[in-house]
Image (cartoon, rainbow, N blue to C red; front, side):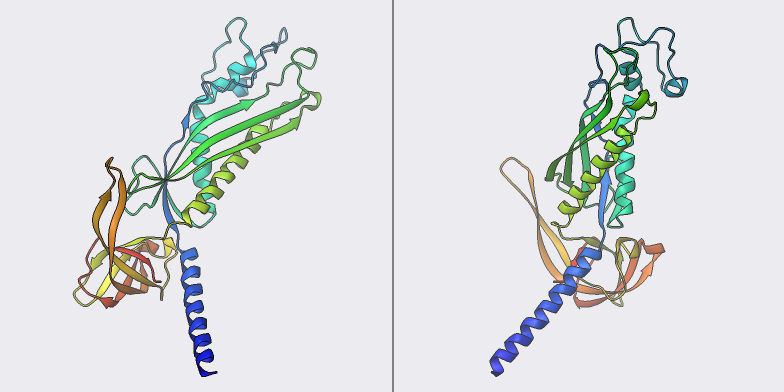
Length: 304
């Protein structure tokens, strides 16, 4: 009976410790850098109807053409497709900006933009737009050109990479198709906006799922002789007073026969406990709990 009780107690303590570690790991924010998406759709007019023609006397909407550098369509060219292509160069910027905003709103990431990830970045997000299609409105007086509904489709090939090694952690396809009835040839088309939003939210879900499979990492930025240390991130990355982190020293980088990085050998050398916040959450102060020889550049992981 005594052995059973002791076993139960030990199991309970282990379960509680694991639960605390799991909860802490969810609270910590991963650092991601987003590169501008590539666009290989070739002009944005893939969904254009070749039979659609501009009715006689109808002029291009100046609000659509303004600021886009739109030129009069060549003879025989679908003006709706020409208008759609005018804004095509912005597709990658639009989705990159929207993805950045939605990732920040999750409160689960430290997000930056640019080709070169900053120090401490764990994940690099990149993608390729492979489809961006929309049905032109056409002319309700012309049976050959009029469409009873608007349809927009956006597809992205998303890549989530390890920022240090460049290895692909996850490759996913995000796609969204939105349909809107074209009543009385209404001028407002919400299908593109809706498709953009939905495909970006799919990307966010893929990034969240992939990031949770990789342990959070922080780093030591300064060590004082009295045993106090400074780490990053601070509260901006979800780090709070009382958290305990194990400290690891990176060893030799391992590579396969082709020279591809397989990561680094790691050795646990101690642990630290967070005691305060610094620099508006960019860093934190901690005390050395165990170990010795800790130095700048050593990495932190949630205590097991």
